[in-house]
Image (tube, rainbow, N blue to C red; front, side, top):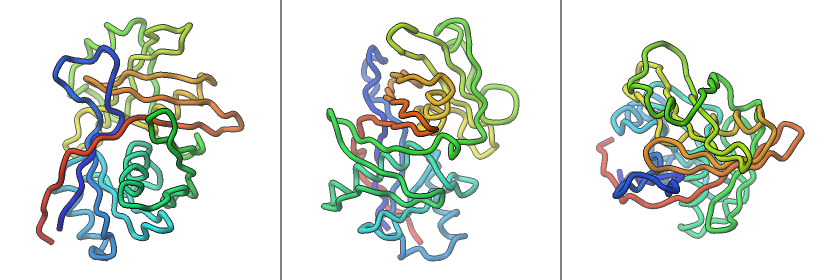
Length: 230
């Protein structure tokens, strides 16, 4: 089985030289070929990405999102990535349908965007630090338990944030390079549009739409394919 590998939220301004950035994502476009949920979980664990998406109906945008250790009802970078890939394959991808509910998607300004409810992005603790240097100095893996999103203002006037994400769920993912759901939560909490520089070289753009809705966007690049045995 060929798995498309994407990098989602590429292009952090001022990122590390020679580092493309973007959170790796696996996408199985022929989800019905893997109907067994245990097999899907095994494949997601074998790939080892923070998330892998199984596309169950490309025309309708029905998707199943897996971490190496479980299933997610909603996740940001997988939905941005799969929306981009479906358009590359000729599908409209105007609405994606993860278990959480319908997620509109569109393209603008060279980025792929989704809009979702902030209430869907649960289970991540937001912790503000005094300076971006304090965020950069955090060790990886970070001691402790529970999903932590560490952030600091890079420029509060312009809405620029420096952030890092630590899942700390015991499945081998010590740090997320770019985390859409956490960015969505931060945007809803601060009630303002943000540009988030996360990880080594990633950038996430958000828009606070009010009424608990947030738009989330960024660039997506292909990183080729991997072949797995099923």
